[in-house]
Length: 325
Image 1 (tube, rainbow, N blue to C red):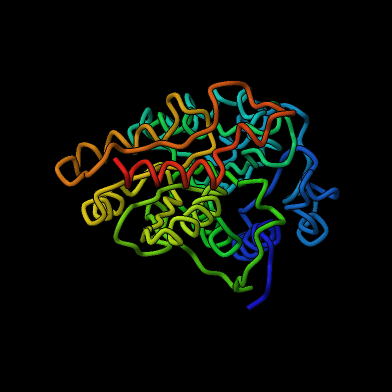
Image 2: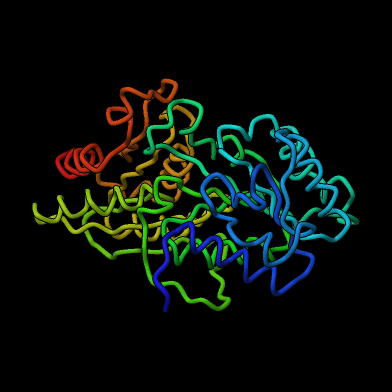
């Protein structure tokens, strides 16, 4: 298999999808000849032409409005929002149009062919306009799927599943992993099921749950804990809408403890949903309170990014508190 970083894996997925079906189109701000601000779409316009990979105006609401219309006519648009922080002008289109199109027509019409790609999260010294983790805003919206990969192999397989899934998918890419994560990725087409978590590592003493770039953080924390003799089970949700509560609950019933590590601010982040659901499903199995390790309830700071991040040391401390409860 080829060695790819996360960006190359996403580019490969788009290439495979566009070659497979001529209805797949890629568009967004600077995605054409420039290849996108992170170069995720490099070479696609040259290979497939300006009619299938093209730049849009700098208007996020217009990008998604156009994508909704294209998908409603049977197209398979892959719309890029250049940064997750700038998805909010398109919030109305995504929440009130994309997510409800099938429901409001009684399943007569849909925009299920739509995939929205966007980089999200911090770790690149981008400040408060280029570092947010807004997944919880959209996870409150029935009618969407939300997918967040952790590495290149997952990114390609999940993105191909998203593009050809019969439902609209918000595909959020952890930008700090774009070039940091490198791994073996098949060059041909393959898919990974949406809505199914993966047990990345089995363990017996505590369950650690996350998604996206936080899986690397969790793995580092688990390495520290294992030096103390703690056996950690690590679960990557991969999809947070729908999310695989059964896999997490089964793990917690085995270990009796749960730590959720997330990059987003603490209050009302998706980890709160995980904690509430697992408390309902596995209350009698819990040996200690469910712990959440999160970003701070402040705007994302530029100068104090390191202090803000839910890093491996904070996660390790949460593991110790849970074991010593």
